[in-house]
Image 1 (cartoon, rainbow, N blue to C red):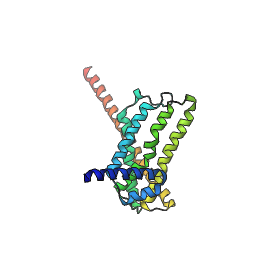
Image 2 (cartoon, helix red, strand yellow):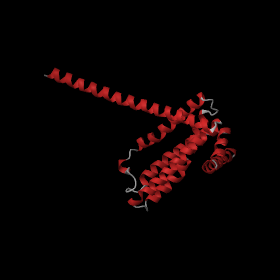
Image 3 (cartoon, rainbow, N blue to C red):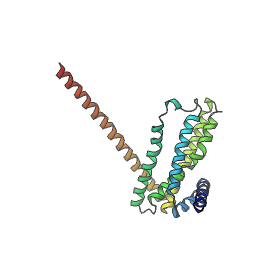
Image 4 (cartoon, rainbow, N blue to C red):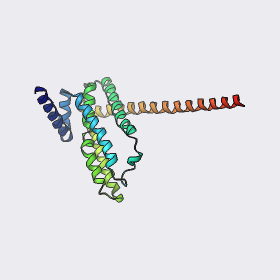
Length: 215
């Protein structure tokens, strides 16, 4: 019984915190700084993935460039999770160097809550696309951009609040995080491209050797 009550209280607190993040983000992130919940973070990430899958199948075919039959759900999941986790790691590393006060679990929780605008508004936007014409694609793209701008602003706010940075230092640290993030994925991309070239070269050499041996 006590466990059930505690679960309900935790769920209510998470819901209240999600609403606070939308309308009073600074207060919401201050509460996360005092007490964080990794379970809530993972639930929010899972909800984000579910919303993404739903929007792929719900968004009108003449609005979206990604048709459901062409979608690779595994790739879509990776495209959401990999940047999030690498962003959290980059944020943790840079803030640790730059005298930050946040812990990894706090950053992960705050980043997850920063996705609340997407979780809340992505499905209604997908539903709206069903009544929009091709000529109203600009309206759809504008609303979608506003959602992601909202998410980006929440990420900036959580960086400032969790680490008690000034606005100027927040921008500086944010630029360092972006540089680290881009460098990391650039290195991964370069390594992947080079590996493919090496594999292709080895295959061609093997084919040439087999041809010479057989002839």
